[in-house]
Length: 199
Image 1 (cartoon, one colour):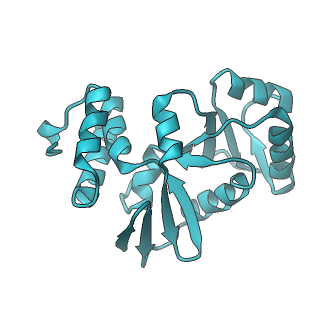
Image 2: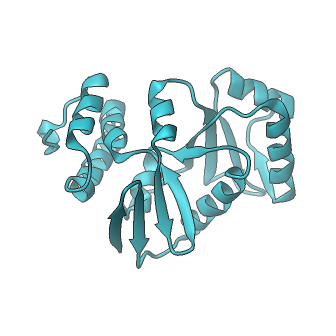
């Protein structure tokens, strides 16, 4: 697998496109017809070749009004998806408005699933306003900026999250804005020196 960098974009070449990648790509193609999105957390490192599992694809979306969400809900049903939350369309929309997450999977499956939430804070807003396009052949996805993804993983703090942060650092340290990374690390009150993340 090779990575090619352009401003605001990363092209992945010679990637083995897995069933998980196909699931995510198909769903995001539907989603982007209704609102902007950005993928954060575990799937980001999987996309760049880290061998680890994930049950959910954490996704932040811009606010949708109720009519748009209802249309999206109906489209998902037609395309063979369902919501894991035991709510009707009104209840699901209320959950999103309250800052909660909703989960979506293909019919007759539970894993993997997409976890959606509305933008809720400045970090979410930065992620979606400065999202990074990842191009794989004819397909594309939008992910959180690496400069925020690494500190966020350190902030979460589990062994797996720290390993994810180090993995991203090792791949992108020559390409990212290190001063911006440092500002996010300060804002989240995390340090990376002990893991080899030199900022």
